[in-house]
Image (cartoon, rainbow, N blue to C red):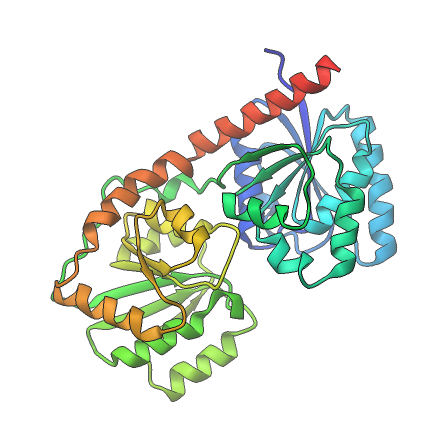
Length: 360
């Protein structure tokens, strides 16, 4: 089969985030294709990690900058004989569609619950999506929940695939780390420090526990840092904010259990990374996390932090065995988030798109 030769990717920035890390993995992993990565604006911190493609930062800072970006990308597509344009995130998707027009096949990836995050709150965004999205576009959703959320507002395009994001191969441990009861439990959580990630719920649970048998480390940065720091200090909680860590795949090995209690999301790289690291999980009882974990986790009621506190206490006492489902999750995540699996699915979709346009 003749494969498409060149993919032009568009993303809003290359700061530290899930969509950004996923794009870098995909570009570096799909070595059989040529890649151009167009970054609309700063930050551009992760650009140095791209080893299998050319990075072009357009430095957009204004509305007029986005209009100029459309023209610049059109020129790049033509000059580089691009065969497929692939965008991540909302602004990049709009710019990419307008740049690709009807002439070039266009793929966009749903990395979040775009309906809940944006369309429900912003009528202009909803209208803009409906005006620019064509049935001929191709869609990749990182979860079925993200796809269903999008389809509440937008019925197009016709061609859709659900493909999980891949995680760094270094997260995959060789064996599952069994949690040993009757000893101190070192818990870990990862995510941007913002209300959506619901770290207050974790702090509420650790306040309920009030025991020296538990401690929690949280990795990530964000707007809620000062608020969380104040709560931890005032309430004397056994919780530490660790900031961002480039070697998270090493640090996760030091913990006993992973906690993830976000209110909603499209999919969670952090959940995949924890499962691959061999940790058992306690997560929010929401549909997308049932999907992300394959059901191989313990689920908590977000309306009651005592639910999490009680589950942790029972696990520490040895009255609740979380290792059985944890082991199943450890094997399951290899089938959906391992780079070899994900890259094959994306390459197959690119091949399908290319065959479709060649047959027209």
